[in-house]
Image 1 (cartoon, rainbow, N blue to C red):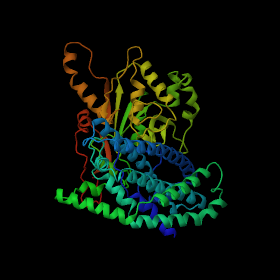
Image 2 (image 1 turned 90 degrees about the horizontal axis):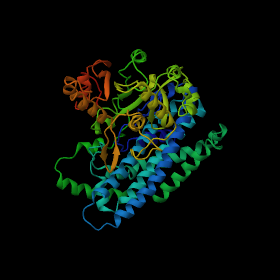
Image 3 (image 1 turned 45 degrees about the horizontal axis):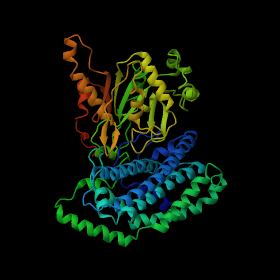
Image 4 (image 1 turned 180 degrees about the vertical axis):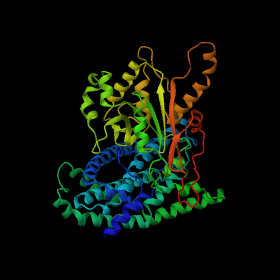
Length: 525
């Protein structure tokens, strides 16, 4: 039975994700069944589980709201008699799917990580690790049922959910793949065996105080609720198989060659498929501390995530460098009214003695991070705003004001109660203060204004190309950002080296399929 529980969390992790890379909190490892889980110190794992429980709780709350939106959308679309959706209707259903996949991304990554719970030596931590994995697996299964039952019998909406979305890297046939997953006989069997294992472990959990109390009660209530929902609403396996098969036969008649992207889409899009150290070393990160200045923009990319293969962009994450506590004190920011409420938290070093120097938005929300975490990437670039130090100070203070806000899985720049990583940068610099601001480009995607990190690079490239003529005439430069550095990762050597500004600009056009060294089993779609 224990083996069945292990198989459950691994099997459920191989579901559809295919969405933007959402950076996790420090010390996360994203390989399924990661053996790194058993190597974490007890103190660090205890802290990490507590942090991830908060993330899971936020995701489940967000999915609950999304379920209501899905139901309203399904009803609204059901009233439409026209044969073609308007652009607004199209955007509504596509944005719904994107939000769902964003939430799914975080659950998959946590599920993949904690699926190695058996490697944890201390029993209470091992049981807590199992609980995180199990609640993520149940929630994924439940939400798959909600999506399928909401739209299975709505042919036009179902067809729309199966369309590829190049702008966000969503492959074709997402709906059908999720349908297959929740009607897969092996997954259904393992789900039942996982419940048996969970109930068998309840006495051990109680012995460690993990069955009751405010920190655990909500988790067990969620597990029971999800299990009951699945039992009541489960899609009939054979009905689902015949429905899917019939539609596939029709598709095969129309499409002679099977789309390989649909096969790739069945795997967890945000699982790291090759465990390797980041190209940027800790020694290079220490050097960065001598170069970076408060207000700098950090762009980074981590390789070997399956989701990277479905994304048209190169840069996956942005963060704001704010400097050390001493830097901010010298700038007079420690007493700023936007900074003061969070000052003590910012001054707190992590268990490894690394003090925060960065504000970024990860899956658990807006947080302070040490540079040792944020810069531990495969590619990294730094851009510096051409603004006064007082305006950069204001940007840092504004970023502080967002500390603790949750991640915006809808990627909507209109609201400010939740943020994504690039929105934190946008909000820090968008408002003119004494005439100074950065005019960042927003793009309209699925009816929402947003700002992929690659758009910032393109803006930098456009403005830089325009600098020559104004300079010759003695006019102000068009550029709003200066290039500081680009650490370019190399898959052959496994290291990152300084590269030119031209190479940096070229990243938004370069292919995303690095060739693996000869004889290597590495592969990135």
